[in-house]
Each structure stands twice: as C-alpha cells, then as structure tokens.
Image 1 (cartoon, helix red, strand yellow):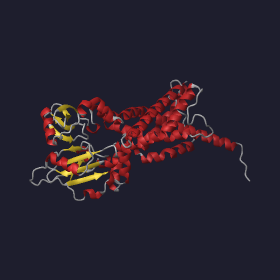
Image 2 (tube, rainbow, N blue to C red; image 1 turned 60 degrees about the horizontal axis):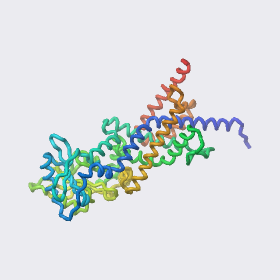
Image 3 (cartoon, rainbow, N blue to C red; image 1 turned 45 degrees about the vertical axis):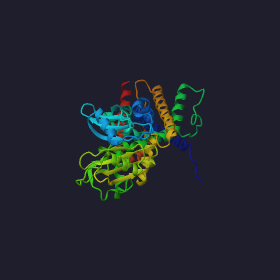
Image 4 (cartoon, rainbow, N blue to C red; image 1 turned 90 degrees about the vertical axis):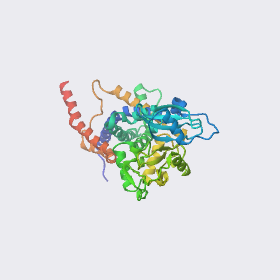
Length: 459
C-alpha cells in the first residue's frame, strides 16, 4: 500500500490553479478580440431579425396596397409602367406575395443606379422608387446587413468577422471551463444579492455567459457559412463529396462560368458557387416574362419569389424564393426560348451538409419558427450585450493602472500545452483561428512575456 506525501495534493492544487489561470488568460484574449464585435453583431443582428416588420414600418407606402377583387396586371404591363416612371434596364421582377402587396421591378438607371420601382399590381400606378436593397428588401436593411457583415470595409474586414466567429467559440469553451462549479455553488445559475459591486459584475458575466453560451455557439457556427474563407471552402467541399446538391443536377445542362451569386438577386448558400445554366438560342422568339411567371406558378414555386430576367441571348429566367419555412426554399431556371426547366432545386434535394447549413441560416435570420424564433434570438442578443459589457467592466475595474491586466502567463510548458490541447481542435476546424492563435502565442511568448520584467526593472 502506497501513501501520498503531503506535497502531492499541494502540487496538484498548484497545477490546477496554474491551468485555471492559463485558461483565463486565453479567455481574456478571446474576449479582448471578440467582445466589441459581438456587441456590434448582436445589435445589428437583433434589428435584422425584424426585417419585414421594420420594412413595413418605414416603407409601407411602397410595399403595401389596398387589396382588391380585380385581377392583377400581367408582369409585362407592370414592368412597362415601371420603365415609364424610371427608364433603364430591368434586372428582376417580384410578383406580389400577397393580395395587399405591391409588385416590384428592379431597374438600373443611368442617373440613379440600381433602383426598385414599386407598382400597384391592380391599377398600374407607380408608388415610387428606392435604392435597390437586394435580398434585404430596403435601403435601410441593406445598410444594416452590410454593417453586420462589415461588407462596407472590404475583404479584410470580412476575414475579421470570420476570426471573431471562430474566436467566439474559443471564448465559449474557455468560459465554460472557468464557470465550472468545482467547489463553489454560489453565483453560477443566478446573480447573488447583497454582494459587492465587483462580485455582482462577475455574477452577471458568468451567469449570463452560461445561459447564452449555446446561442453564441449556434450564431457563430451558422454565421460562418457567409464568410469568405471558411464558408467558401466548406461550400466547395460539400459539392465535391456530394453533400450539397447532387452532381446529376448538372450532367446534361449547358452551363456558363458565371456563379449564381454573381448573376442572381438572391441565391442559397448551397448554390452560391454553382454555375448559371444557359439558354439555347433556336431562332424562336423568347417566351417573355408573362409566360415565365405562369410557368413558375404552375411549378408550384412558393409565393414571394423573385424572377431574374435573362441577361443576353443565352441568359435564363430564374426564380428564387427563401420563405420562413426552409422546406419551401427553391431555385428554378428556365430556358428563355423553350421554357424548358434547366434546373429545379430545393431543400429536399440537398445533401446532409447543405440541409444543416440552410436550416441553420434560416434560424439564424429569425425565420424558421416565426415570432418565437425572433423573440428567443432577441433575448440572446440582449444577453450577449450584457455579457460583453459586464466583461469589459470587470476588466476595467480589476486592471492595474497603466497595464493591460491580463492574467499571468504560465511558467511551465505543461500548463500551456494543456490549454493548447483545449483549443487545438477549434484551430484545426477554423484555420484562420489557428493562424491567429499562433500569432497571439508568439506575441505572448516573445513580446508580452519580456515586457513585464523590463517594466519591473525600470520601476
């Protein structure tokens, strides 16, 4: 029978304490990088959840009409009225999704650029025009969407958002490790009363972080498909291994080199990089927009779809719709001369990866479960802001004057190794996070670790 010396439990406790501080250090770095952006994402994303409601409030005079028993005008007449009011080139047509909605024509004007003209589908009266908001459906929501994704600031900012999403996962994993009860029961599931301000802020951060952790993971993972590096490569991988759209969709269809995301007003994540099919000129006259709309309706495309008109002799009529229920998501392409269906793909035809990501995107945008979806994610956005603000307050209150206030760097390689083992799988799944992890680690070892002794020597 062996006996443990008194030094062994002391050494174990010291090792556990060192690991705790090391994880805390990386949690600190992740928070330093993520929290400002998480506030931005939570505020803009929370507002975007109510896209339809805000658009109706701000642009109701353009979007809504008095429903009538009269038959709606043909699409060609609506387009003609729109071009009378605003001459230009027509890019797309949006039939009314409901009896009280206007018809919309996207027009590129030489003087105003891309505009959307709103037309009463019963009388043909032009209700006005606004800058084209694309899938966001309004100028205000387009601005909000671009701020949310940092599209205004170019591809580098897009990579920053991708880094933030990946580091948010690190933040959650390390945060849950720090939250773990161990020998403490208070301040875990509810905020304590009658404690100091410092303890209250700590409880607010830890308790809120625990309840919102799964939401942060979900929003980060479902937001990544839009990113330029990770999203694009996962998209290509899903197509290559047959987990997106089955390859047989394209076997005997003439295709261009132009991806759908460049040629269409809106497309699904699964088809962003898929090639646009081509019409085959036969000498016959094009079928026209009225016939194309009739064919889309006959095919049962869900109401609320957008029709992109053919651009050039080999262009196609394309209908795309992304309703609240992801099961009705669908894209259909028609030959502009014969009306033949060149592509007809919906949620049901997707592979496992495509279905998971499209469903996740729908929930991320607050669509899949209606008002409940919106309210739950709104609460999560409020919680994310509260957690971020409380984390910043905690740091500000406890940091030494004139210093960053990061937890001390581990003195033993073994402790650092254990932390790396905790976050290494995330670095493999998210390569940009892995690259940034190496950069932060090198800065920590080669720069930050040497500044403290120098500061102490000079003080």
